[in-house]
Image 1 (cartoon, helix red, strand yellow):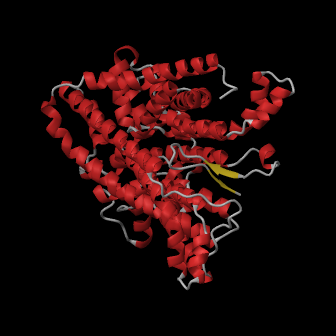
Image 2 (tube, rainbow, N blue to C red; image 1 turned 90 degrees about the horizontal axis):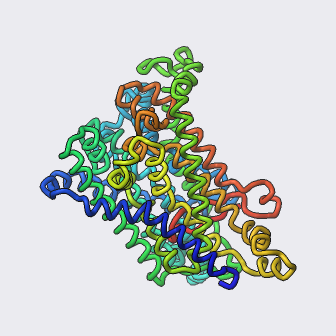
Length: 549
């Protein structure tokens, strides 16, 4: 575009190309080149198959359930949507490891439900428990895809079908079906990529029963040490990275080439409310779902943290409020490490996003570098950790540098929201500022920055949130002086210290929820201009920015 000078584009492209080379191209190339003998390949296929089928099933469930909730809530209420929107995103903000721990605390034998009603879920620790927990965690992605489809839906065909005598559901389906396929496929692919490499859920719910996925198998192989374990971990990391990249590439292909996605006509009316009875049933079902998947598990987590000893009834006489602080005080070095590491990584990601926002629209090389960096976000965390370890471990293992590289590589994909916001920014205000004598920097600050500032803010907050509870990268790359709070939780879990796990999990979840709510809310000065109070941007083309007022 006319406002981008050649040296701006060249500098931005050089920065992105260097970042892609360091964070993606070299680690992945080195991992592929250094692949050892395939003699151990057969032993990796079992965990890979477990990861594939649990990811496929959980992603299908999450996409369908999440999209169903988006439709039901959109047609059930007009007021209170902001609160329901935030509640729908709670599983996404809950760290997966902690979410799985909370489910076990609520529904396993001797859990909260067993203590209250003598009922427990026998299959929770095993493959189906892993699948269910992964689906619960990924359901908000399906929910956001449903909002994307509804935003693109034209309700005129629905009214036409109704006027011809069609029932409400049939008329709705006729209008919704053309716009639902692409967001649904994209949500499935993104959920699949996340579930494929998730470590916390299968570690917490699969390992006790001997069910092992590729991610937990990598951790076990690296923990045992030795050449054979490292060889198997390397092959598994390469397999996971290839499958995850394939899933997301297919998703982006579906989004780009499927002509079925329509857009609402200007001034088109919103989705009409359901009949009164359907609204009541929808809200009751949603309340039951939230209570089952989030309410009771989080309540069990808090009660376990409050109870002075694990195994005692979680009644007020057994509560020890002071115990909520002692594990946090003991883990303060890890807490400081976590906050500093996550903050620095979030700042670097936001800055790289700003560079990409200017270079990507003007340079094919910048677009290629941006896509290469984005693919690391879709790659499983265990695969990213092993690739970084193979590439830089000999020089940086046990230092903050290797953790910082891994965090930026894994979470750079969040910056795609900044690129999308910059692409949608209008040039007329910039031209007006220039015509009144403003320089390039002044015009950018007056016209472009206000349009992308909300996206930059949200990307930084989401990257900070992800860094605070990241356990996969930290558990594989930390050294004696670089332990994070997530590693402290994992160590306490391995040692059987359930209360310490619960206490640290409560604080981590509270911080994650606070950052998530902060990311959704516009600053007060923006709300005063009549802008939407809630905005949630998910990376990648399939889940476009959705605004709710």
